[in-house]
Length: 579
Picture 1: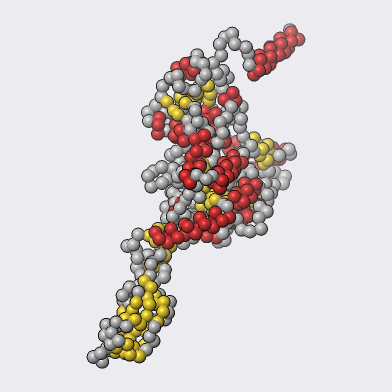
Picture 2: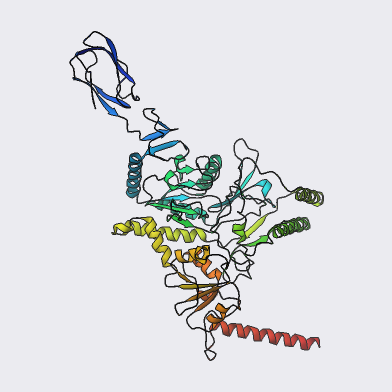
């Protein structure tokens, strides 16, 4: 934009310098017009002067005296343009950045940032990967919340404090996290998005950095979004990190409900994982309200039920490394306290017909907890009982030592996720199809391939009063490629049941080519992104598939029969010896 004076005039002095930003109607220069009247030229818009052609002296009417560049208001801070200072709160802008919730950008600037990020990622042959922390990569807790003090080894369990707080924190890394981070860092640009405070997020980032062999930072400071930066404490917004283009962005989180799009759908960029719990805690940190998308499985079927009762492969076994009488005393007393806690929880939940996985039950806090301020209102009777318990332990124990726990964990979640990321990354950078240059498409295709061709009929797993198509179990099955139906038909391939004896189960036992399995088959297939062998998930010992009465026995049936015969023979001998 060329600046000029309305009449032949004499320039006295400029009030601004080249490239100095100014707002609309800001004084630019003083001059004397043709009638010898001293006047001031005001800026016609916000912006800056790029070049001055005439510093002083006489100029003719309409003669160019300077070149002005209007401000584009691309970046805003607190409702004001970061370049010229103009109030642009009424303009359409997009909130972005990490650590500065007031910073916003114009749609044009958002597009420029997006293109710049995409170019950098493509050049490095990487994708962007947004990581949740709590219950996804780690389990963290405060000392006051744990029933047993963990053994801090500096490899998988860490202890730390935060500036300005006396609280002691423990954090346990999810199994396989070191290898996961190193491989993820090779394939992706890493970001953290957590509902913890910023000091907490930075400290966890430092711990994660320390366990890897990377010489460069895994997480840049502006790649960390905490709840201090997030305007909504109950949801996460990908545009804060990627305001224009999310076609190269993957997310890992244990919560699905916090990643909802404007249309109410779950973000297609999300890889949801099973919540990770390690510590035996009274209360969870950074807990959001209960996830409405939680899958409700009967107690005896959910993946964290008793290992022997949960048909199908399963996880954590605990071995207590206490051999002395004093340690056994502590363990017994602590166990009594835990029983008290569990009984109390059960009594408070008798009205619930459906039980959810205890790993997810622990996150049913109705309000988020401030990391630096513990919740108040503890049950007085419970506090008194705990104080008496700890006093008894201190009096009778010869030495005060932390109770050391060794957990044999079979959590391979991060390994399954990494396999998905590898496939998505490989396809993204090798495909020639433009439609597949989007991780949302690639994730959806990979997800649907898991149960493709399966037609599921549920029995005893979805509450009758609810619309089954809205149930999380139904929705997850369809998201992973299965078709779900309400009635038995020739198309049904799987009857997924909670218990034997129902009409659907009886029908499945009489029908060829129909699998009869428990819900863990579906759960594990989804968790591992791979269709599990149905034979490992029989329902209460019933045949997994229909077999005619004259059909030859399978290897498993033969083995079970032989084992039964051996047990009968041993019992017969025992009876004879006793008699």
